Amino acid sequence: MNTSKNLSFICGWGRFPCIEANVLDKIDFSKSFIPRAYGRSYGDEALYRNVYDTTGLNLFLDVDFEKEYIEVQAGTQLKKILEFLLPRGYVLPVVPGTSLISVGGAIANDIHGKSSKGVFGDFVEGFEIITPKDVYRCSKEENGELFWGTMGSMGLIGIVSKAKLKISKGSQYIRQNIIPTKGIGKAIELLETFDKDYEFSVCWLDAFTENALVMFGDYEYYEHLPLDLKFHFKAFKSKKTIEIPFVMPNFIVNDLDMRAYNIYYFNKMPKGESLVHYFDFFFPLDNIKNWNRLYGKRGFLQYQFVGPKEACIEVFDIIKSYKIYPYLVVLKRLKNTSNRVFSFVKEGFTLALDFPVREDVLNMLYKFDDIVVRYNGLIYMAKDSRVPKEVFQYVYKDQIKALLSLKAKYDENFILKSLMFERLL
Ligand SMILES: Cc1cc2nc3c(=O)[nH]c(=O)nc-3n(C[C@H](O)[C@H](O)[C@H](O)COP(=O)(O)OP(=O)(O)OC[C@H]3O[C@@H](n4cnc5c(N)ncnc54)[C@H](O)[C@@H]3O)c2cc1C
Image (cartoon, rainbow, N blue to C red; front, side):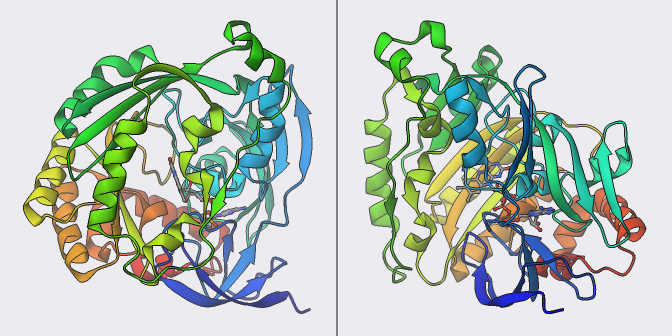
C-alpha cells in the first residue's frame, strides 16, 4: 500500500532546520516516522524523513455543556474549537500564545499558557493513542501510566487520534490590566505580587530599552459586558489577519527596526484596565499570518527555559554584555505539575527569547545553557533546534530514562523518531 502523500520541504516554525520529507497520510509502522500537525513547534521535534500528517483528523466528535467536555479528533486546531465554544460562553482552560496548533500537538508538548490554573494536560480527560504495540484508550483511571506518559512525550510514544477535553465557563472578552515598568527585576516583582489576584498573567519586555508591560487578565462575563458587546456575544467576532506573502531576504528584520517597533508597541498598548477580545489577549501574533517569514531564509530561534528568577536576571546580564538583543521577550511564571514522565513545566519563571539564526547568537546561547545548568533549570524542547546533547542529557537526566523506558514498552523497535530524537537521544 502506498501511504505516501508527497515529498515536501518542511521546517519547524523557526524555519531552522528544514528537511525534505515524505508526507504520509496513513499510519504505517513498517517505517520510521514522526507525527506532525501544524508545525508550530519551533525546532526539529516534528521533523523526520517520514512524517505522518495529522491535520486531516479534524472532526468534532461530541460536546456536552452540562458535563463540560468536548471530544475531537487530535488534528483539530484550537482555533476551530474556540470559535465554536466562545460564542456559547465556554473556553478551553489553557491555551498557548497561538491558536493555530492541534490538540495532539498541545498534548505532545503538554503546553502551558498564561493561566494560573495549570497546563494543558491538567484538563485532558482522556484520549486514544495508536502505538506500534496496540491502540489504547487512556485516562487517569484507564492505562494511567500511558496517559501521563504521553503528555510531553513529543510524539515519540504514539499517535493521539482523538481526545476528550475539559471545557469551562468563560467569555469572548478579557478585562486586562497592563502595568508598565522597567527592567526584568521589576517585572518579576510585579508578577510575584499580583499574579495571585488574576487568572492570567504574562509580561512582554523590550530587550533594547528594558521597557516592560506586565499584563494581567480575567474573563469579563456576559453580565458585566457593555450593552453593545452583549448584543454581539453570541456571534464569534472574527479577526482580520495580514499575511507575509513569502520568505523575506535576510535583512528585513534588524536591530534598528525592532528597536523602533518595540518602542511603538510599548507606547501603543493601553495602560491600566481595558476590555479586549479573547483572541487579541491570548494570540496577538496570529493577526500576522506567517510572521516567521520576516526573519528571512536563515530563520530564527526561540530560546525558552524555566528556572528561578536569578537565572532570568543573569541571562539578561549576558544579553547586555554581548549587546545581542532578542527581538521578542516573553516572561511567565510557572507552577509545578505532577505525574508526568517528561515535562518542561516546573516552579519558576520562564523566559522565551527570539533571535535570528547567526553565529554570534549561537555562541551567546551556550552561555545561557551554562546558567540553566547551574540553576537546575530546563530548556523547552518545543522551541529547540540547537541545545548540545550533553546539556540536554544533564538537565533532563531522570526524565530521559523514564521516557525511554516507556518507549521500550510501547515502541520497542523505535519506529517513532524525529530529527530531535536522533540529535539528542
Ligand atoms: C506563536 C507561537 C506561540 C506559542 N506559544 C506557546 C506557549 O505559550 N506555550 C507553549 O507551551 N507553547 C507555545 N508554542 C509552541 C506550540 O504550542 C507547540 O510547539 C505545539 O506543540 C505545536 O503544535 P502543532 O499542532 O503545531 O504540532 P507540531 O509542531 O506539528 O508537532 C509538535 C509535537 O507534537 C507531536 N504531535 C503532533 N500531533 C500529534 C499527535 N496527534 N499525536 C502525538 N504527537 C503529536 C509531534 O510529533 C511533535 O513532537 C507557541 C508556538 C508559536 C508558533
